[in-house]
Amino acid sequence: MRLETGIGRALAAAFACALVAPAAAQTWPARPVRIVVPFAPGGGVDTVTRLLAQKFSEQIGGSFVVENRGGGGGILGAELVARAVPDGYTLLTSAPEFSVNPGVRSKLPYDPFKDFAYISQLTSGQFMLASHPSVPVRNVRQLIALAKSRPGQLNYGSSGPGSINHLAGELLQSMAGIRWGHVPFKGAGPNLIALMGGEIDFSFASTTAMLEQARTGRIRAIAVTGLKRFGELPEVPTIAESGVPGYNVTGWYGFYAPAGTPAEILRRLYVEAGRGLNSPEIKDKLIKTGNEPVVSSPEEFIEFVRTEIAKWAKVAKESNLRVD
Image (tube, rainbow, N blue to C red):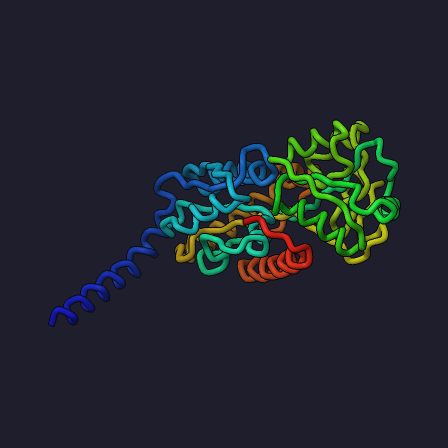
């Protein structure tokens, strides 16, 4: 009898939740929505998220607040969202590290697929490979030749161990058959400062971070990592066209919610993200920094992330790279 009563209560609770979810979606947002950025303020994903949050407030109404929860290469913020109540009031934007972490860490506090509802990819961009002006290299072919003549003596910097620009250097090492050293820094800023100061030979960083310094000659732009040239520096070739065919590293930002978030809210966020990112003022700002709006369907976004996870897991394995 007690078992039957317990089952009855559980079914009643489930039925009540099924009725409440559509009602909650209809009144959403009734209070501030926080969008968690799992990195420090000032970076690319933070900048894009703040532009998007402002647009959401204008288009949807209500308050959308950006909350920076840096740490663990994006893991701490992602875990916070994975464990949040799936009611549409806690969302996540993240960077390529979301797809890198499964391959470089033995264990994550969340499942990248089961614990998240995928809303859309937001942008696509790329990185720049640059050198200190004193390094006698002006293109990738010369870099490869110099690295092969001095195996293990050249080095490159990144924004941290296990970051996407760290993996970009490992991928180039693997595809070009060279050996060089990796010097991790605590963020993009220190990485760029070290390059300008000549503490390191080369560096991978976002086109946004590198653009002004490359224009003024404080660093030398060698190549970009995507499949097409960067419009603001059209004279700088891609790595793929500079002797390493097939090389491609994209910088992208994605939009997620906790698994179980009502479908009506997810659909609304997907539609409004498309409207916001393709508005003239935001689209223009993105393109000038080397990013392009990419509003993919949730299904397309999931497949894209699956491909990225497999790609970087392979690179990490071949490089014997672990960040635990």
